[in-house]
Image (cartoon, rainbow, N blue to C red; front, top):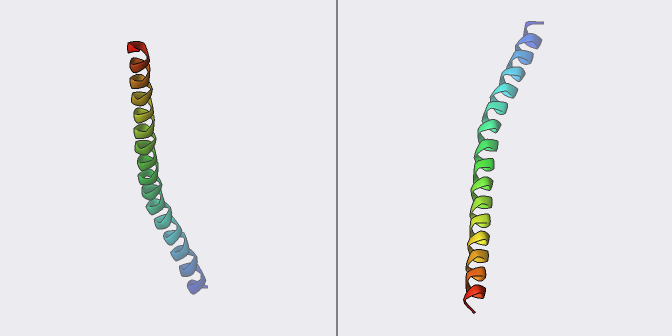
Length: 58
């Protein structure tokens, strides 16, 4: 019985540790994706502004 209880407690501890590690990884991936999206939107907006400025000069 003690072995079973020890195995259950160990599995709960391992799951908790894995969840804590996965939160950090998920946060890192989300921050990376947000940075990529901001860069793409910034580049797209700059490209549109330059195209609009060139059209007004013509």
